[in-house]
Image (cartoon, rainbow over all chains, first blue to last red; front, side, top):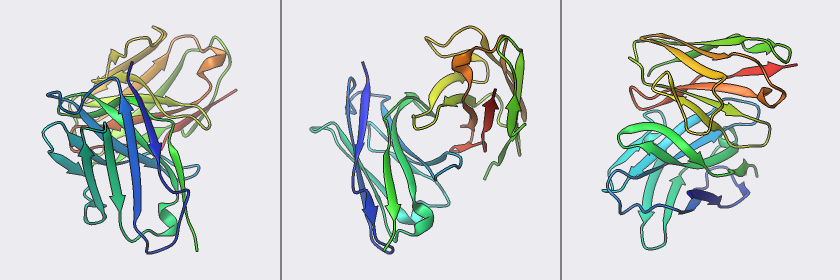
Length: 121
Length: 105
């Protein structure tokens, strides 16, 4: 059974860097074809795809946020880390990590419960 | 960027109704489209991928169709558990989601 869990600060000040960790089980990011992605959702608004990392350390980023995002993995800990720089109140929302359903395709079949981030001074 | 739109934004329906939601892409995405269901305070749940393939464990009353730029999610007989918000997602070029359709009683 695949599970994922997000963790990180609940509150971040404007201009700070956000670091979120996704801890997963039930699969390995050493396995060919595996991938983990991040998606966020502002309160009451739609989902926004952010980034994805593959088993071979290939990375994909949302073009509109690419300059602010970094995704990394620690396969020994079964973790994926997302950092987002220069946080702004518009970045407030719920951040989800999720398991890539099929190699090469950005749809996700198992999601974490999400972690809520508020950007405020 | 590929822009996704959904209609209607809100859908009022009764238990037992057949309902459909439309998703449109700003350019052709072939059949690289997924549908998700999201309930308040919960993570999205994958329903359909590749426009019409039902995810394992999803009830057969859900179905998807379409290709190119226009897609439809249909629920053949609405059940109480189906009241939620539904999102489409294109994954032809990176990924983008539609704005959502809220199913109301």
